[in-house]
Image 1 (cartoon, rainbow, N blue to C red):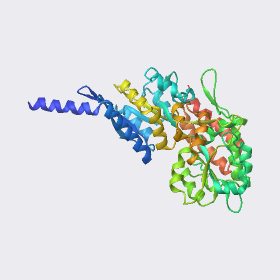
Image 2 (cartoon, rainbow, N blue to C red):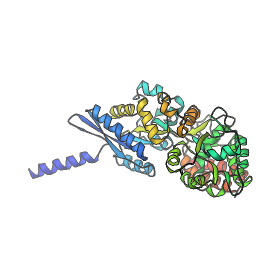
Image 3 (cartoon, rainbow, N blue to C red):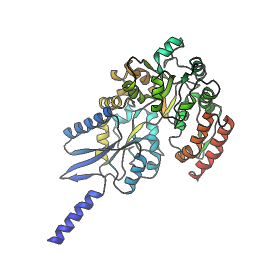
Image 4 (cartoon, rainbow, N blue to C red):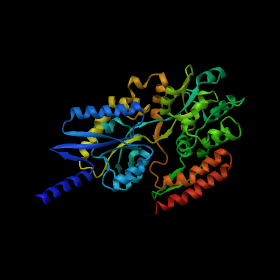
Length: 424
């Protein structure tokens, strides 16, 4: 009896330590790891999980809180240990290694037609690797200009709209006009300069990464790739219209100076509006403006937030059914409002709550059709290139330590050596 009892307990413990989901009495239990962190976003996610559980007695979803700060390493450890959550919240630019490594399920034949047709093809491309789809892109954010409304009004400059944005040249002229007396027309928070530079460079026609007939990717820093970095460099070093001290800062670090009247504008991700709405001093008036446009208009690269399913999950169909529920148009709107971001779904984008002028929602929604795949989305070796080559090169260029020629040389020569190791 003691032996049978011990074996029974051991089997139960092993069952609890393996796999990603469980079945008890015919009821499936799925684990959903969410990276929501803002209070409104966490509340929206938890409420939707409760609504699912109340209406789907055969499939229980457990909410698991994750963190953006450690998600990649945490997921890698859980995949290798066979303990990954069934439903995984991440970002599309973090999926490549997991997709190619066989850790994520190919959702191509599991996704319902409603979801496939509601999300535009350009968004699906952000989660497509090879011939498979490894995530459902559902939230995205453009980079916008957050401006001191009073400052711009008093200056008399033309206020840009999505229909009539500033060009990059006009943007440079206006920031110079707004500067002087220890104040700056713009504060660029470029602690992480690579994704901001590459995503905005799409507006000028910049591509940087070029895939050849053999499928291999090489880096070629062409004239169109120069527009955005040269604008930032000249604002900081020639015109003195961009604050040099913020070039190494994160977005939140610029807000005290922005509220204090030191900078007229700050380029930030759309979701920063929540912090600004909560932290702005009483009476401070701010507005959302589209980022400057170039030869390709307002085109901008994004890496949407995604929902994926672990390859090891024995209940992939049920997991996708939960994702479909979570991303119904009304639910997608709730998630977008909670994160102060834009939904990818075309039906959700029509919701009046996302088209109000308050807090710049209408400006952001007008930019949704211009958002496309980030340049480095499917490039193997991009993380190493970004960390070891591009980040220090852009930082030195923006600070004035090196010129455009050396920037090009380092991005291309050193960069192509890195990428070549991943494409043999």
